[in-house]
Length: 495
Image (tube, rainbow, N blue to C red; front, side, top):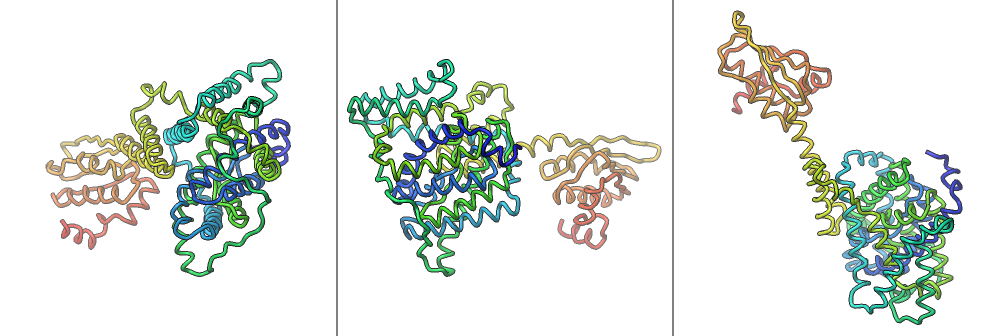
């Protein structure tokens, strides 16, 4: 990973331009998410400023954009409606503390349990949600809006083809500038950023939440804070994985947990709502050339400067221009190869991916969708690994001795097949169970071994087990009963 200084100053021009584009895209999003949460637009704008700037310094993933998000806003609705803004600010601070604790205990490393199919489903679902979020701006509008949106998409995709200049200036920025100028010059009566809500006229200030500091307050905000912390970390770590792939670099996930936590604490103390990483704006940043922490810092700083000091100009940006940018993001985010190659991929991978997409899109709950995907991945994995267990045997007739050779993984998914592989009615004097090529993973596997040994002994057969590896031996010694006479009696009585 590049040095911290290199992460800041290794890509100055492109980071500044990319940050400008992202700042413009953040404004309507922050306002819209504030409206969803049921709070004043400045709450979302202040949050986006604080979270972006703090995460630029403290986060573990350069070039990733963090701000107020829709997934987090949806979780705040009931709290705001029942208890008001001050309890939301307190919940935001507690959310940050929980996320810092998660980072300290290195919970970011749990991302290794999220399969590629789940990540792909998550990405595709977000791409669909980003596109769907633009539909209200394209419904019941005049033809001018469709023309402006189409022109914006044309600029975004064609401008990069121009020699030299096309690769220097981000095309989304050109789209916003050109369409704003055209809208003003033609005097078009179309929806603008200013129509979404009143922009703040002052910088955020330190604001301790005005709530009673007692257990009652804690029990009110704790369920919301836990949910916000979980969804925020999940979306941030998934977005970090995507940006890792886009930039071919690595991120520090545990530092990202702590950085997200610190940024939420600052946001809550500055009058802002909780937030996390944003896949749409992160993709805009990377596609516009942003690679370092400077791009995230510029995005947050320019956001607050523009909405406070340039609000007259910012309010005139047509929403059609930003819709065009977000459609570009949804198209660029969606993994088209996952659809094209769906017949080539294993059926289980396709089911996990599609299930994740369906659940996220249907519920708008990212955590639930990813949870379903992870659960299905685990079930398919357990089923697949369970099939690799086999038991072969050979009979030494003169000695009336049969040897069973167990190969593979014995755990809850293969325990029944393990038991079924033995012939307990065969008339032999001795049985040897060779476990040198097997591994026992859980108490279900140990219970299966107990059952096999005890059944043979109950039939009058002398049983010997051999070859257990060290880890399996530890498991069997701790939880097994077949070599503990007193416990064997208890087990037999239970049957």
